[in-house]
Amino acid sequence: MDFTIPERTQIICEMMDEFVKKELFPLDSIGLGSTDWAATEKELGKKREMVKKMELWAPNHPKEFGGMGLKLMEHAYVSEVLGQSSLGHYVFGCQAPDAGNIEILHQYGTDEQKEKYLKPLVEGKIRSCFSMTEVDMPGSNPTMLETTAVKDGDDYVINGHKWYSSSADGAKFAIVMAVTNPENSRYLQASMILVPSDTEGFNLVRNIPVMGHAGAGYFSHGEILYQNVRVPQKNILGGEGQGFVMAQDRLGPGRIHHCMRWLGICNRAFDMMCKRAVGRTIAPGKKLADKEVIQSWIAECAADIHAARLMVIHAGWKIDQVGASAARKEISMIKYVVANTLQKVLDTAIQLHGGLGMSSDTVLCGFWAHERGARIYDGADEVHKVSVAKQILKAYRME
Ligand SMILES: Cc1cc2nc3c(=O)[nH]c(=O)nc-3n(C[C@H](O)[C@H](O)[C@H](O)COP(=O)(O)OP(=O)(O)OC[C@H]3O[C@@H](n4cnc5c(N)ncnc54)[C@H](O)[C@@H]3O)c2cc1C
Image 1 (cartoon, rainbow, N blue to C red):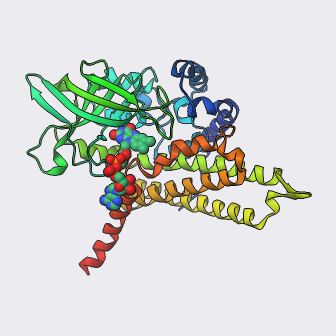
Image 2: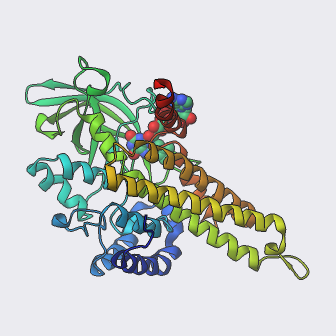
């Protein structure tokens, strides 16, 4: 396996790195602490224009719709660079949940759906959300959905209670996961349906306060009541009952990019740790960096980040070699390894910064509050561990 980053990717990453550090680091607090989305969007809109002029917009999205069309591993390195700032992915037009929705629309959308939803989404003119998790049902077992989409004339009528539909506030449409075929086997009951947010019965109840902060606009997580929401049957994505298959497609390779984004955060926190350690005087003539316990933290975090990064690169390499399905075990392993590495590195960085680490004067506690969810969303750690163990033990059981 060759670890050299191709020259073109290297150049793109260097340009992005310079931009992120110069233009976005000073703005981090407006993303992590955003309450006035209109003002934040305006400010970030200017940065987005700069990115478009540099021709670095939508790095992972299809070329025919105005993206750069980077391949899986090219975008992995990009994602690591952009992850250093809470605003990186948004400003470069490759933010979740739109990125996953774009993949679905690109792969499964009809020409009409692509024109109406995909095109303006890639261009950054609109936003979207992905509405699968429900208030009363376990998100860890998405075959237990209560939301239904029942055929009535030419339409579907959707009823259900969702939450954690990230970025629903201001989104132009949602991709809603709803049961259309209750008669089918468990994994073939649900479908993905496009629901414009101005449809009657689409009720955004609130932005859920996460770690005490409800956020706004893109930086929020919505609770949505779908009450007799009527949309044409042509709004279905892919075929009826194909929702889970498509959700797997959406989540699988995308995890490489999520994990690399988390590693970008780790790199930033690690860099802050090292700078603080050499700069902070702890006793006359002694810096924090002179203490063995601090050196041990730094050595451990460096090794953890490195190991996690190698696992992600290997998983990406395996997807390229044999496809996402055959790399399921590796994809699950990186999910919990990197999420825990992220948590450990952020926690250590906060500890090393002392009171400063707990304040919002650095980006650390904002990252902590926003990224604690990494161990829960896209499949909780435990679910991935069960899946990995089952795959490993299967071979032993057959023996
Ligand atoms: C910040 C954030 C953003 C999110 N964004 C979105 C979004 O955009 N769209 C969307 O649809 N959803 C989103 N989610 C929801 C997320 O996907 C779910 O929270 C997740 O799937 C877990 O489901 P749950 O919350 O219902 O937890 P539950 O299913 O009730 O599980 C609770 C806990 O039980 C444990 N557990 C679960 N199953 C097992 C098992 N088999 N064995 C052992 N332990 C187990 C895990 O520790 C888990 O955390 C988001 C969540 C967060 C926190």
